[in-house]
Image 1 (cartoon, rainbow, N blue to C red):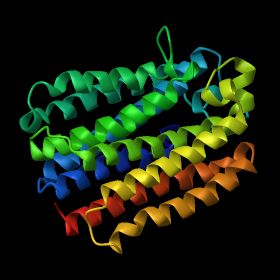
Image 2: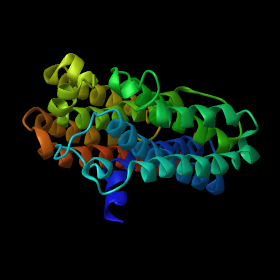
Image 3: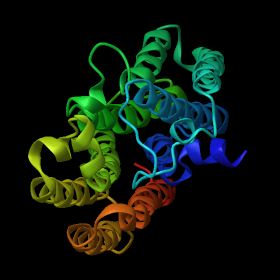
Image 4: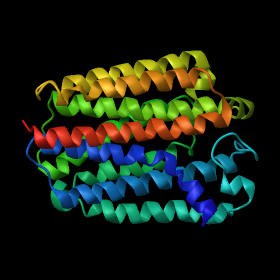
Length: 292
């Protein structure tokens, strides 16, 4: 089971958890918290990310973009631990399970959730496959902001409240989560710079360079902190200072990013994703205690 667990990339799974928790925080703020649809959204998000990670491993191997002994996560297919056929079947098997799970949300959100779920499934594969793989053409970062920030936050809140009504709190939280999730990808691509450049995989780090993307990492975090501060501006002063703790950690992480290379960044990848999840937990707590 070890190669399969490695293929799930557990260090990054907090990213999908965070989007659902942040959406639930918004629902709680608007007096709409509902435990059952929240748990379904959580399971759906985790399975979708695992399926996307499996697809990334399969299609990068198929397209010759992986090599043995790479700096990042061990690739079971490339290393010969998992057969390509098994990984492909696992990818689409998980997407099928997720489709069934997602359809259960129709009870709360209506039939129009089907195209949303279909878009998520397409993204899970299109990130690495198809005629124009997003991750190979510098579009991965934008896709992450959308599908790990805007989509999970907005639609997790929607299926709980059963009302599609955006306000500045939800919008700020959604973009903040998306920017923090994009930073996880930046660390991943920063670590893989040499490997990706050698095989022609044009991530944003390959296109713009390490220095520029380190600055983008910094700016994303500052913007996220500003959005969190704006979203929590209506609650009492002391509980609203969570953005200060986040920004402090982010500045430390930025310094670490600038001075590390290769596998040393695996630790930062884990901590960047955990920090995102902690921010979402913080929002869930303060919005539950201090609703609108």
